[in-house]
Length: 262
Length: 262
Image (cartoon, rainbow over all chains, first blue to last red; front, side):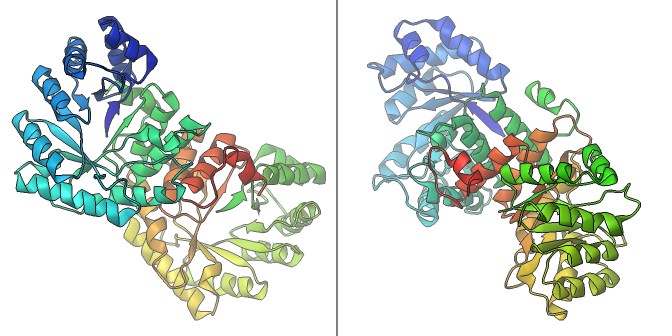
């Protein structure tokens, strides 16, 4: 699966400070550590405190691609911030994210096409967060339909069912898992699926355990990608073992190490 | 889910020795430790080295039910050994197990009825271990049909898809997971599902990690019960968290402890 490292995000104190002080080495260290731990792509987010995201985003992109050619997942709700990131990027890109609102889809999908970027479509809209699986499927279908209409290849789309914390929306987690499975049958070829994992454990005191258990279950439901902390070794071990069980890579006694060196 | 503790088994050195020496306190300690760790029922197996299973089985049953009234899972391939266990049992019982062979079903199902016992039906036959999901479903259907024919209530039946080690039958594990889901639609009411977990990691050097990852995925596929080592704390934490995610018990900050005190 495509593992997107979540740690280059201005909301984390070390990264927020590094952005402010233009401490490029700190950002690059964070990029390399995530890749070393098994990340296939890196999320890039200026964070909510950034006062100049139109300058911070390209600086982050340039800093990171000096040390790696892994894909960059440009993370912002503002289309202009996404676009300056796309302009700065030489690496492959993934736009994170577009909502199911027509006015967003009409702006972001053409951007993804213009820059030959992949795209994460998140199943929320101005009406708010979906309350059940049917609402998630309806929003997912709207995103897929908009891609098809705009001639954006659906296999470059990742649908994110939006993960909610277990301590506030426990009854919805099964719906979220089933959405991962059901999104795949919306179209042929299928859209891919991803999720922002850490949200599931927000506000709990056993975060890593809840994260890795939910991820393992989501992989059982066919998840293609996740945005997560690749430096959480137990999480990565669970991910690698879940993919082993689904026969995605071959068993050997040192399969955990072998996977990270792939 | 119904957690069946696997540790009272003569194949383990401490239990084999305790059976031989009639060290009742050792057996009872093993029973109580498993219950303390969260076991809902206890597997009872004399082990392959037992020379007098017709005597050892009732002794084990009597030793265990002196200290607990939890259900006992009488584990033997020999119908006579099962029957002497059933005779000795005052606690509820589960017969572990019957294969899909007609001559076994014709003996064991009447026993289960006579003693008002639940029953584990394992999807193997004299022809050997099934090679794919279709073969598992065919054997499962034969077991369910035999229960129906003999008027044994199918909701007292647990189907076990027979788990194989990841290092010898890696390509079959996904089929085994899907069998857990598909067994449920063989009849209405549905049969229950169980599995002997530890087999999945036999011969590997990260047994606990593979066990808990496979169990978490099996729970995602709807597993109702498992025979496992309840003293493996990380395994139990994964199990409890997977059930939390499926909304089977309510989140609280101390949900791990709360579950074990249930």
